[in-house]
Image (cartoon, rainbow, N blue to C red; front, side, top):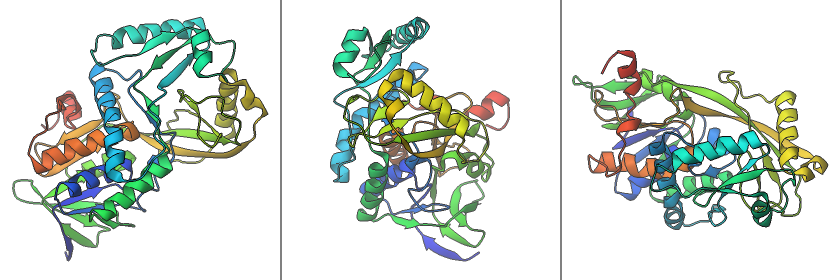
Length: 371
């Protein structure tokens, strides 16, 4: 097969995670080619609400990694050289509309309190209204986490793309990975594109999002990751009455409300449905009554890459030297830490962050297959 390119690392997937990894690697001196089956910045990363943080992510080690990554955002923005609409000065609210929800969130908080990095607390209604005047006067309270926030995902995505290009990352669009060239010791030697040509490289990073399972199968690795469809609504703008990001509902700086979200197991179907729109709107009005008076101007969907155990895959695949995986839900939150960890592993051969729990081969061990 013809070798069309040679490089040190091929990053597969042009979303926020893939671009963050490519940027970190190039900043640390590696020659990087990023490939995407469509075009960078056209997938899940631009079809989500852009929340950043660790609220109610379990086990606690996953919450801690998420908060660590959230802390990395200001420095990453500085290095990217452009603003991404980052809001980390107001924290993050999860509203309680019923006593049952308040008890549930209080119980979840008790579990998080076992971690030394967690700083969340429960709020009474009056305290919520002081920082979020637009929410319903019928709420029971809220959970508040000062370490969480959000960003503008479109800005983040295209700022990352420009930053990658600035530091020398070569980006190939319409470049579907269809196989790998492996050496006698099962070591990565290259990536096959469109059944047509080879990019010769000793390292490959699977950051293919919802397609990561298929890309892993190409080297004989099984990861239990599947697509989970979410749908989002955007309303016409309103006066700023909810400046603090909330779970499944936020008002952005332009005044528009972003309303989510649903979890639908429909394979790779990215269509939108009136049923989901009606359900999301009804729930949003319960939280912020003014939404009843606002027109919805856009509905769209995206596919989350979810693992069966809810924990991302992050790290090297030990039996395929040179092959790395960074995939799983919460890519916006984890993009900075994914970039650090994968660049650490490729450049230094180790990372100072604890990642054993994210081992991509854990699914095979659990099922008693290859190790």
